[in-house]
Length: 264
Ligand code: NAP
Image (cartoon, rainbow, N blue to C red; front, side, top):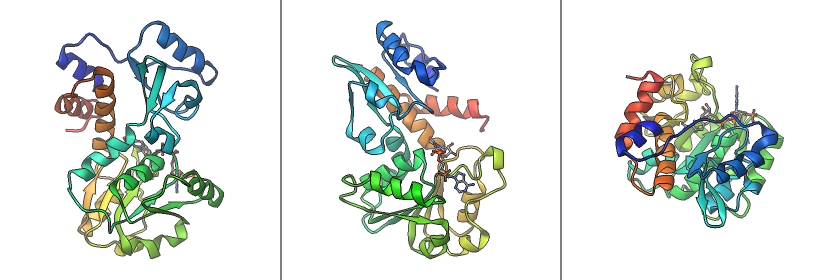
């Protein structure tokens, strides 16, 4: 989708993949600087490890503790995380007041961190994160101390889900349950689905298949459903805008992304 945008804009750039081993990250970004790269995305397993190697990171990346987009500045490489902007894009189109909304987030991995930061930006009343490992949940909660002035972040294990679902105004699946590899599964049992508020916004970060079983269950209950395609698209568009300092041709990128993913 980046190269489709670059071709459409007629600018002299290329977006290329590089496989970088964990012990070569420092050398790789020094090399990127030496050959004059404009910027780059960075993904698993380097999203946290790159932070001490950068000259600067912005407050969003600081809060999330992970960087996905890096660009050149006079002082050196600067990092941000465009997953938050990507996650928020379809929600801001709904033009709602989120101040009374409780967000329930399924999963407490890397993407959940961007979702929590996004829910804080929306101004949600409460952010309830569900995980399966009590120690990971405790660490997750602790990492938001100092960042959670507006919304209350709470953590729960899955057994609390039936009690939390009826109050959820925004329900986000950040687990891989329902992805192509385990397509027929949902993070919710059908009994739990019965507890969903009818006007809940169900958001699945997964983009294939679409809809996932989770989104289909929610739609059957009258929910508004959002899949992960727009987040993927918008985080990429936001990165391209940082590098090129001009608006990204989002429609061109959407078409290319759908084509790549084999979505009509
Ligand atoms: P991650 O860091 O591995 O986190 C996954 C989370 O899901 C962890 O909390 C994990 O729990 C939990 N989990 C995994 N399997 C589970 C199961 N069977 N039951 C209960 N919990 C389970 O992965 P991630 O980077 O956050 O990505 C998560 C999903 O979001 C993936 O499907 C990814 O494709 C999607 N994603 C989409 C976008 C987009 O742009 N649309 C962006 C980022 C990610 P433990 O910690 O206990 O293992």
